[in-house]
Image (tube, rainbow over all chains, first blue to last red; front, side, top):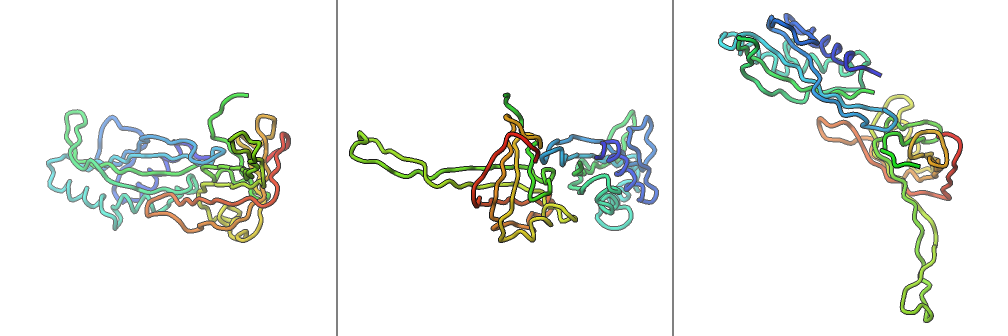
Length: 135
Length: 139
């Protein structure tokens, strides 16, 4: 039976296979892009009897750099793509059990591609939704 | 006795507890109604109970692992299987009766689902023979 902490760490491990991408499971005080932050959005318990399955919905926030940087959008595009080493979907789904921590998972969609203000800095970022099924 | 929320229905197929692969379970038991209306029925129909029958319906999370539910059902197609089921946990009691249900595995869908969905399928097996229930024992 996996904990949210285990699943979050498993997702971060998969994201760390992307060359040059920093990962964290806790929202950092300072942003040092490119960085992927893994957070849980919601959990739907009791998808089967006897505590057999829960549904976890995670959000991976990927921050690439200041919104004005010419290279930032190009870099974020590469993370959003579905092929190649920078692909977030590909990296996460490379191990759909997160090393045996879950039954299966899927990166379902990307949303909120655009600027993200943290402190007094405006970054370029995107969010990836990941659905994880685990006991 | 108290009302309860359905989270712990226990389901066993043969000797294997498959509860953690089942999302919904319904055991419906019925009796045919046989008309015995006659001239002394005072203008009302009268019926008596006839043959009993039943249907066991399950919503299942597909799993093709060794000893998992899809693997269990595969060789049972076309045969009578014994399903043991209790509404609220594995331990039988007066408030959690255990039903022993012989069913004909006449249809199931080992491949099912749309892209992106969790693979699930539903079955609806007719009972075959008598259904019994006990207020002791375990599923």
